[in-house]
Length: 216
Figure 1: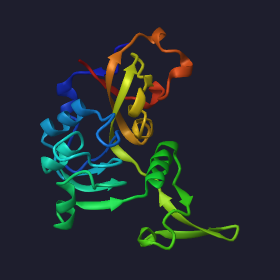
Figure 2: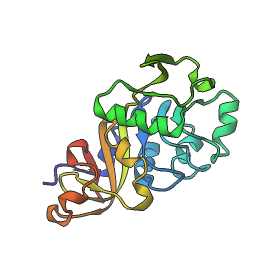
Figure 3: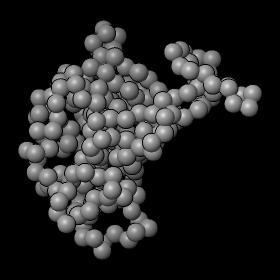
């Protein structure tokens, strides 16, 4: 029953140079801040970040930018972070901006075994550059490939011993999508509960998608 709980030291040891890490959260809300600290403490560098944004300067996800751990970012926007923007302009971070709806769908595809999604968003704009255009029933679409990561960091409101997760408020942003898109999913939960405390209808992320839970 306690097989998914892991000590902080064990989680820190999982992060290595060059990994792709997906992180839940939206504009500093619902971010797994303790797990982000684990990444920093690991010393891992040259990481690829998959997240909706890069938070604010030296705050939440922005801490990874501040510490110089990120080489590449796939996200929807970076305007909140006054450190990310100049780093991008100086060529020190490679940023791929993705329309937010397309970003969400690419994560969903990554967690569903799909190769990608067809969308009209971005047709005729710079978002089309380098993308495959596919025609279906006389209509043109961009093929947006699935997004996957080696490790996903998730913030949940509650987790039970099997890893079943619920979310509260803004933590139910990109966290459920991120939880499914990686080879290894690690969860930071506000509260651990017993199996019978969460009704089946309230579970958002089934435990089958969760590999580890940060023990407190």
